[in-house]
Length: 153
Image (cartoon, rainbow, N blue to C red; front, side, top):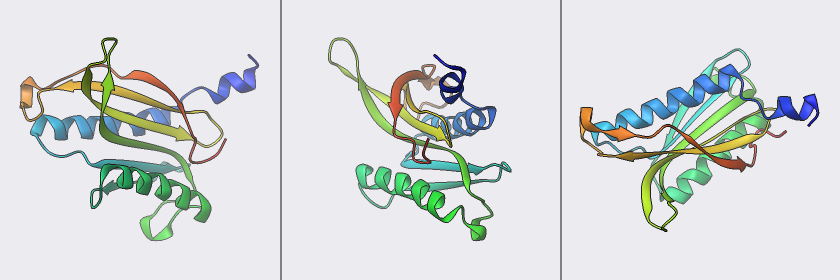
């Protein structure tokens, strides 16, 4: 692997912070018993960040809306009215399910994250005990593979 392709697979500290914060917010909501919906965080090179929540439609439509919002911000090089320049990285988080080896499904938070010039990835964290407060449990995030980079490579 060349240094260039190796660098494209790394996660920057900015993207790590953005995605961890979003995952933390979603886990807090689940512990409280609240809906996660589809959450999106986008940050520019100056570390200005903006958050969005998509909830007024079905989950697939909301997920499409979040992805389209990232693409729109890329095309327009940000949105001055929101205080964000051209997006450098993004993270999308939503509820889903993951099959285990036996074919059983478990509740999971699914995350998609990417940044300009790098490979985009997805990951998931299993959870149990929605609304259980301190008894809410979740797993460490596990990789789920590469996804389309909404900001381009």
